[in-house]
Length: 510
Image 1 (cartoon, one colour):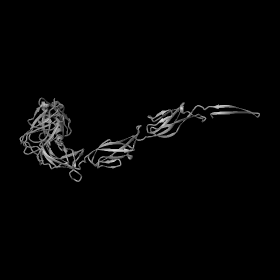
Image 2 (image 1 turned 90 degrees about the vertical axis):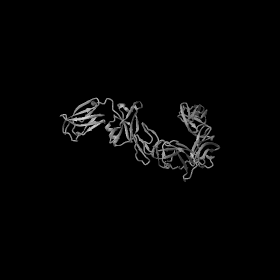
Image 3 (image 1 turned 135 degrees about the vertical axis):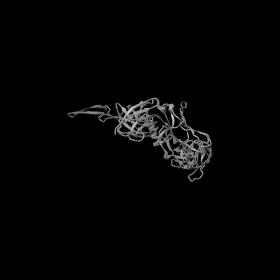
Image 4 (image 1 turned 45 degrees about the vertical axis):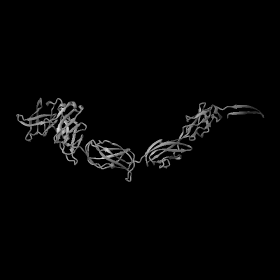
């Protein structure tokens, strides 16, 4: 043991003494005290350091020890720690290569500030909003004090349930929170209660583009007038309503609107502050075009000019750019995708208020507009407006191409389904593919046959079949012009086009 000790020697009843001083060995352990401490932020705590050697000798090394702490904002003056950040931290001491640790719990200090959140809120009357309160000390430590904070508001019709505010009067109000002598404020905007229902006045059939009067009222849950103030958005099924944003004052708006597209069974719906009143739409009504007016109707690549009195009654004209059905599929198959401009496909319908179909008297000009990228290999000078008839695209007579305007115009007397069709550059008989050859069935296909005549002869030179083909493909049922199925054998086909003919042989095997 380290210390000053007496050495005693004895011989034949005689003795003597000596003094020895035992020094401690090299330190192999360090003890930091207090091993566990609790202080508040800003307070101080003194630490001691004791070294120990392998023999268990101990000695104070506080002055020679270097102290540190996980509280990165805390400070040290020798062995004295001044706490800052709240939390549980490890105190570390180091002396001559050995170290020791202790634990300190730093509690937040006295609250010097209070933070109320949300700092700014907006709700409707009758709605609720929860608030939180966070205290802060001088060191910047924060902790939740929501449950201990007293909340209040200058909204005289409000109610509080702990930290939950139920809005009363519409207006801009101040929320106040108070905790342990400190306080903070927030701002709340209370909007008027949203209407439970919307009442739209009765609407009769209207003429498109002509203004008409409309009254809208806002109602509460009991169906009585709600004196709402704010904006209201109008919409309809055509998507072409004007004056679509109106100002409701004291629960009512009366004004004029117009609808710029014809439609049967249109309806108007309203929206307020993101709430759509789909269940409170208007009655169904028709938006018609006056037959006594001159009209030019344009709709995505379609232009129709309708002179006054071309239709017997006020009418609804609708253009469908995505019609479908087996007839269209069959017509496109017959024509070939290389010869029709599918993006110009449209179906035009014209009806009266009773949904009865009408016609044009006299015929009127229809124009279909195309884009250069839609042409592909099609010669624009050959473009024709074609009408869908019995599963085929039939050219409308008298059409005219206006290349500079990228437009084709023709006169029509009946509505229907229309498309632009043309002839590809370089279309010649040598492009035609004939298969199967030989044919063991009852069908031979001629492909790439746009605008040509096909003739079938027997080996004696007698004409058996003649057909003019407008589509991109012709399927021959191996019968002659009288419907008789041809016998097995070899036959000559002739493909006749405007500037060139082609002959070939096809074999039928029964």
